[in-house]
Length: 82
Image (tube, rainbow, N blue to C red; front, side):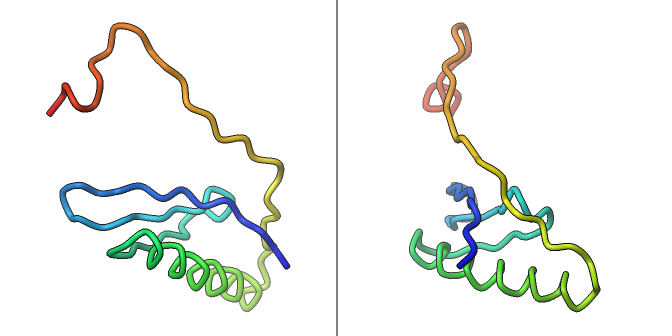
């Protein structure tokens, strides 16, 4: 079983969850719910990897990923920017 990190962001304007896969540039999908976005991410990754193999291109293997947040003083919070 392969494992890829996905980033799921809520698009407030469109009302959908947008998914990107950092280890697979260009692999993007979306869903109307968080769970639908996760399921579509599985489908998008499978299709992306299959396309790379069909084209004879290497399939990137994800290295160790650390996801973290940082706080920045002096910037407005997202809620204050609205």
